[in-house]
Image (cartoon, rainbow, N blue to C red):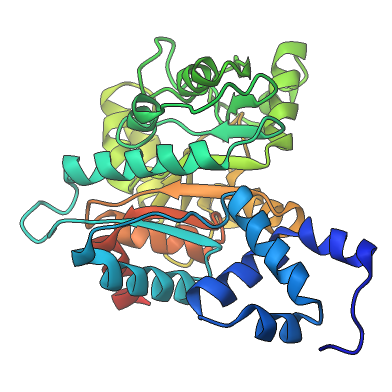
Amino acid sequence: MPENMPGPGSEARLLTDDHFLRRVAYSYYEDGNSQESIADIECCSRQTISKALQKARDKSIVRISIVPDLHTGYLRNLQREVRIRLGLDDLVLIAGQNMNTIPSHSHIDEVTSDIAKAAADYLDQLLTDSDVLAVSGGQSFMRPLVQYMSPARVLPHLQIVSTIGFVEARTSNGDANLIAHDLAEAYGANHLWFPCPAFLPNQDMVDNTRKWPIVKDAYEMMMRANIMVMGLWTPHSNEDMVTRGILSREQVDQIAASRPVMDMNHWVFDASGKCLNESSEMQPFPYSLSGLEIPRLKDEIQQRNIKVIMLAGGSPSYVPSIRVALKAKLANILITDHITAQLLLLED
C-alpha cells in the first residue's frame, strides 16, 4: 500500500475531481488495471478507487451498455484509439456508412440521425439540475437532437440558453434560440432568449447591444455554461447564407479568399486552426458576432473544465472541419460515426 495515504479530506477532494474520476475509469475499464494497482499508482486506498468508479458511473463519466456482438470489439478499440490520438475527454461512436458514393458536400441522413440520437441519450445522462447548458443551432444535428430527447426526469433548476443570436428575422427550426427553448420545455427547465441579431456591423455595436438588460442577462448565463453542445459547418454553407440574404456575395468572397475550413457559429477557421475573424490580415472582418466568442472555448475548457460536445459526421466534408475544431481545441467531447473516426485517424 502507498506510504502517504490521503486522509478523509483528501479522499473527498479526489471524489469531486472529474479529472481523477475519468483517469481512474479509463485505467480500470479501458486499460484493464485492477483497483489495487490503480490505488498504488494514484497513492490512495483501494476503497477510494472503488468509490471513484461508483462516482464515475453516477456522473455518467462511465456509461455501461450492451452493444451488438458484431461491433463490440472493433468499435470499442477504434473509440479508444481515436479518443487517445485526438486528446479527447470522451468519444461516442455510432456505426457509420461508406461515404465514397456520395458527393463531398452531401451527408447520409441515416448517419446524421443516429449521431443526433446518440447525442440526445448522452446529454440526458449527463445533465443535472445544477447545470447551465448552452447550445448552437443547426438543422442537421441540433434539431434532430431535440426531436430525439426523451427526458427521464424533470430538471427545474437547469438553465438553458443559445450561444448565438437570431440569424434571420424569421425563426427557423434550426435556430439556436428555438432549440434552447425547446430543450428547456422538454426538461421543465429555466430558459432565456438571447434576443439580438447574430450579425452586427462592428464590435462597438456588439458591446453596446450586450449592455441592454435583457441581452446582458442571457449573455451572462451563456458565460456561466458548464456544458455546451455545438454543431459545426463547412465553408460551402456560406453559399446558402448569400441565397438567404444574410451575407452579401462580397462578404462571402472576402472570407473565401482566406481558405476557411471550418465554421462554428460563423466564427471561421483556416486549416491551421487560426480564427479568421480575429486575424490581422482580415481586419476589419466583414461582420461582428453578438454571441459566444468561439475561440475562447479553448480557455474555458482548460480553466473551467467545461464540457463542449461537438456533433459532426456522415459526410466527407466534416473530416477536415472536425480536424480543425480539435486542433483549435474548441471541443473535448465528440459524437460521430466510425467511418468519420477512421478518416480522422488517416489524417492524423
